[in-house]
Image 1 (cartoon, rainbow, N blue to C red):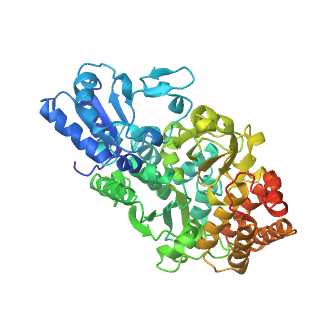
Image 2 (tube, rainbow, N blue to C red):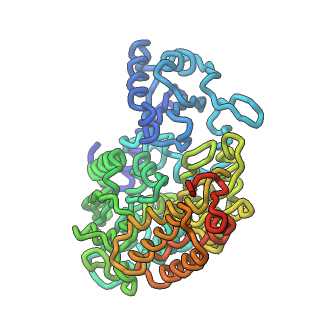
Length: 558
């Protein structure tokens, strides 16, 4: 494809792509996200290709290799279109039958269908599976429809429509639309996205940077990875729109080196966008130019913090700085810089194409839109779920997640990753949004959600997260460096039977110091697991200390 020189040329190309595609032609879509690849997704894909060739069906059946579909517990996933039949845990031995029976003759193979435990019925269609039925997959939904390495697939589902709309607007109007949508950053802090863009645009200086945080250091979190792997063009489109609004001509994607598939697919997407005139010089003949480079991160959790990330981008040690100077004024190389995470950028095309009024109808008063969560831990249906803000914890865990396996009881859920709080059973009807989670002593974070059952020791969990954070602290400020070290020492003692009277109060005192005096959000949020576990499960601490007993039988005391 030649470089596109105008929005009309883009629409002509899109129409041509759509016209060439037969919506009624059978297409076997195979998940090849990192999770499904670990189950053998690549070999499964090759087997499907060989089988179609063997049965002389190349002209009759298509294959589409997609990113993560979200239902990671059941991978590898295969969906037959246009019938939308979902097969789970597919193996190579199943391939010939799927091709000959389902793709060709529309016959359903029951053994590979999802079984609803409540009704004991087999469910054939993806949209009817409870895990998917109760979600609202606005951002994540296209993952199952497109090949992430194909810009044609992205264009066919409406990709870059928002960009053509944005470049016909003034930058100020684009920012106003994002502000009106109510979008808050999905990276953890929940700062209003439009206000951040406006501050960066209004900052003095001709050189401004736009940055995508794809570092995602939370244990058990893989939302950003799956978006970057499965729909990289949505992130690029959001960044180009943001750069146009802010007045930036150079951007960076800071991505974990441990995400090789995301790096590869994002690199391919950048090359494709540049080749088609959607990135680079004079985008779509608008006179606006913007280029993006990929920078691989070294896996430091603290580099999820904006100033530490920018220091790493500059080639320095990833250490945060005090926030009295905002990055919107002096960020990367001292220039005004705007940082948002992968999910935030992926929301932008949706807001611009459908409008702020439409978007702001989703969610709660203070938390608009949907949020993708990585649902893991002691849960029947683990995976990625996208739900509207304001949904109850109970709905996510029991209705979508399928509840606790092995007949065990729910005990707690931690939201917000290692810096989040642990919430007990009596808070299952809490609304999941930025403000309500913060009030409860937890946080939204980037979207980690870890479920714990009755066999989990809450003191041991607090020790685990404190140990992780102590190891990831950059050590620049004393409260975080020494405070976490002492908290870990006390928690180690409690879980090993060396706890003593006053330890709980000392932990609370150390937490207060970290909250008040830490330099960055890592230290300021690090007390959440300890404080929430003391608040809601104080009896477990007291049993460890006074009775030298772990009620859950996890800690080896005595």
